[in-house]
Amino acid sequence: MNCIIVDDQDSARLVVRQLCEGIKDLDIIEEFSSAIEAIKFLNQQSVDVIFLDIHMPGFSGFDFVQTLKSAAQIVLITADKDLAIEAYEYESISDYLVKPITQERFKKSMNKVKNKLHRTSMIQHGGSSSDLIGNDLYINIDRRLTKLKFDDILFIKAKGDYIDVKTHKEMYVVHSTLKKIKDKLPDNIFLQTHRSYIINFTKIIDIEDNSVLIEKNVIPISRSNRPELIRRLNLL
Amino acid sequence: MKNCVIVEDEFTAQEVAKHLAVKYGDLNILGTFDNAEDALKFINKNETVDIVFLDIHLPDMSGFSFLENLTSTPKVVLVTSDKNLALTAYNFDLVVDYLVKPLQKDRFIEAINQC
Image 1 (cartoon, helix red, strand yellow):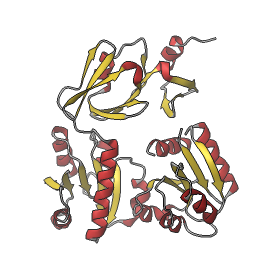
Image 2 (cartoon, chains in turn yellow, orange; image 1 turned 90 degrees about the horizontal axis):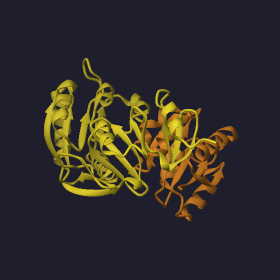
Image 3 (spheres, rainbow over the protein chains, first blue to last red; image 1 turned 90 degrees about the vertical axis):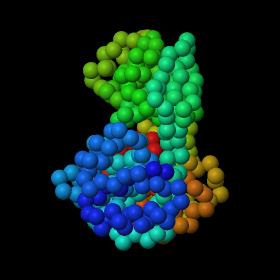
């Protein structure tokens, strides 16, 4: 796993570096003393894990998490015990470690991260991401072009520089944007319901005021996209 | 469809969780328990439990002791009115989310999506 450390204090970064040394297959590729620098770096390069301090001058750890457009797992490292509840608000935060951190707890944390990365799986990807051929979409996963039938796609969710493509069985994380994939999808079955969602509307189970149900997923409908959805339905 | 169990000793909170689980989670509720012991017995011999909604303050033991006594590995969503235990919760790998009562629909859906 590749990781970066973001902490404004030199001594704190040293501690994390030492903890990392105790973990096999964990490589620190860069360290940053400011969140802004780290964000610039992450715009160019993807990493698996980000060790992040919460209290930094100017830009807090939570500001950083909100700004982040990466599928990386975040491990908060802090002396502040009081923000764990806030940390649970962010799906990308895998763990919350309070200093001093034992090697044992750190190791446990890395196992957790590994499992989570594995579950989100297939995150790594090559260059271009999708191409339209017939009834299928090819997505680039692990430098392998994987075929998805349009009809198997339930919905697509935007997540920063990535999109989640959900089928009945799998969730693929692809390096692409909603706009790009929208151009590749046939608009007779796909429809954008929200800034961050495109759905296969043949898969809709039911529709409420501001959400649709697709299998067990509740997808939001924004007010501006609702009329188009209703227009496309075969309403009684 | 995923199977869930609700472990909650407060009647109203139980009802809210049931309602949200069925309506927005599309979950199948295998059982609702108002104490830890019965819930543990059930979950430990029922491998089909995918998700456990767990109150932390239960009459017979804490939610954390409950987690230590689990022999299976369902995903756990903690549901509590106590905001001060989130840090402890991070020590348990099974815990995917920590929800503060009263349960909010949107936050509940987010939690289920992670399970």
